[in-house]
Amino acid sequence: MFPYENLDVYKKAYSVNQVIYRLLKGNKSIPGYARDQLGRASLSIMLNIAEGSAKFSKKDRRNFYVTARGSTFECAALISFLIEENEMTTEIFEELKKEYDSLSRMLFTMIKNLEE
Image 1 (cartoon, rainbow, N blue to C red):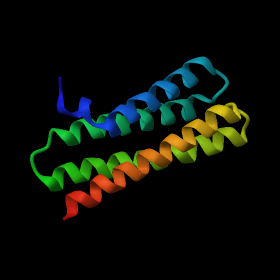
Image 2: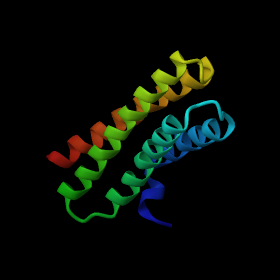
Image 3: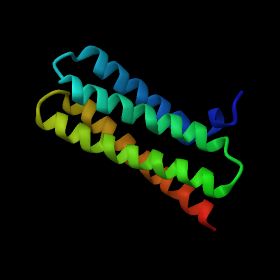
Image 4: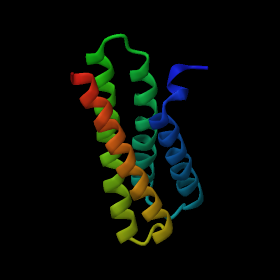
């Protein structure tokens, strides 16, 4: 087992990425550029957490977690756009918004703890 697999923040990012994957796979009406951007940003959260956990220095880990948090904000902005364009249900939007907020807070705490 890799160390990142034990991180709650990774587990949450993985779970959210599954929701996004299913949303994009099942909704072909979302324009390709938006599908691609949301898919890449969602993967970026999960993958930067995993990659950051492998770094030896606090500074390097922190940089990956900062990038993951930025991708979290990117996803939140994209789903806000998509809900306004009626490309997802309110239920999925609310679930994702809550999860992105939680991910953002978890990453913020991890980043701050690495600054001390």
